[in-house]
Image 1 (cartoon, rainbow, N blue to C red):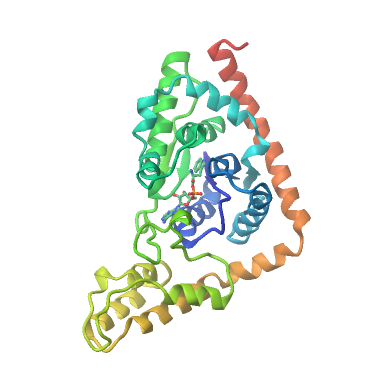
Image 2 (cartoon, rainbow, N blue to C red):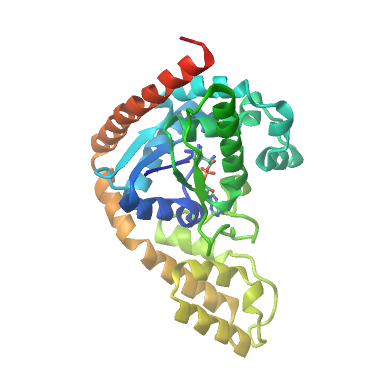
Length: 320
Ligand code: TYM
């Protein structure tokens, strides 16, 4: 079984990325050959500064390795090191209608927020389909925000197979049930573009400051509170045991328990949860060559798979 997922190098990865995708991907490494990549072509849709993009790729590689990506089980690479993906995208573009892409939620959301879209943003889902189909993926672990992109991918694969003969495996997405969408500190979806993230890695002071700024209502300390409506509790659920969550809910309902207390408990759990990963990250950061070597080796292996698929695709559409 082939498992595949990607993440954009568009800033510091956050706990939404971790609980939405990275944790699942790391667990799935035990179940089949895993391909994980850093989606730097996708990041170009937001026109990053070139030097910042390069640094983000390196830092994200460190972060993912620190979070448990095991290079003996996983092919880890940078998307742009296997440029065949853009060739496949071009071919898929020609079986994709404009109306189909206009219905994509993430595109519509960006437009609604006043973003002036470039063609890259518009065809983003086709590049993502190419990522998934190029490597003949069976399972794609992602957060819920990527669900529609997976449906688009399946649709394009089925359309291509119908038009040109069996070429692609039809992938399935897997979305974590408990935490399909991790909320940000303001209660909206946690997202780099909403500036509401809690980074996985950072100094104690910085993470504490962010956790202390999680938005709550103005119920006074003494009054009972509704845990089901509170953002702090929603985040606490990610890192605390069921008993600990129940205990926090009980305190909310009993009163005399302030949001500041809950935030402190959340910070402590988060800080402990990511402690082993922080240690691994510090060790890895001391050897940057190792990180680049990993990505280079991964790209070699990924290219072999990409060529196999592209050979079939080129023949199927009449380019050979
Ligand atoms: P990206 O970089 O935005 O996010 C990486 C992964 O993190 C998940 N995620 C979340 N999950 C739960 N709650 C949140 N608040 C949250 N925020 C982010 C995302 O669902 C994603 O799984 N288009 C992709 C990258 C990509 C890709 C692919 C993924 C490119 N090609 C092929 C899978 C397969 C993206 O922008 O993810």
